[in-house]
Length: 224
Ligand SMILES: [Ca+2]
Ligand SMILES: [Ca+2]
Ligand SMILES: [Ca+2]
Image: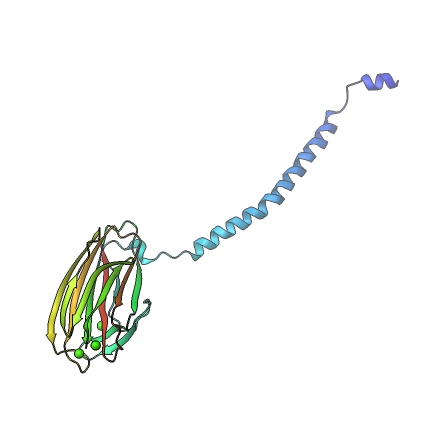
């Protein structure tokens, strides 16, 4: 009888089927339990990132000004320099002795040219110590005021052109008691500036601001 039992292959196949399919269902449930936690986590992260993402104006900016500051509301966004009010000039960003003032503008992707315009002002008793203009850390222009008479130069820098419009020379106007200030408007064009443009001006004066200083005003950066 035992021999016949071992040799007999007939029987209800549903018994095997139930055992095997229940095993598969269990495996499926276990997989869901393991994977769903991670997926929920990931979708939560994606949702949070989308909720937090801000679409800044730079995404939509195509032409025109991306930065403008006349210092009427202080000097937020600038590193170095201090806003002062000068008779004849209004609010400007003053550079103390040896001081460097910089700001960084974010430009729209694909910007082909950026144009920086600003006024550089030499105040009171300067006697030739220069102010240096920097774009992305590179010196692109030098301005020396000697009691209102100015000397300017612009080193050859690839992709950068500098023009300057002097408003007056050696006239006793503007701030302070020493007369003889100077002011010029710079226009600096930067080709293929990248997405972050850093602009700065450094003072080479070694004298206190009560005697002399450089200042900047009406800084505007536009892209095209
Ligand atoms: Ca101003
Ligand atoms: Ca001096
Ligand atoms: Ca003056």
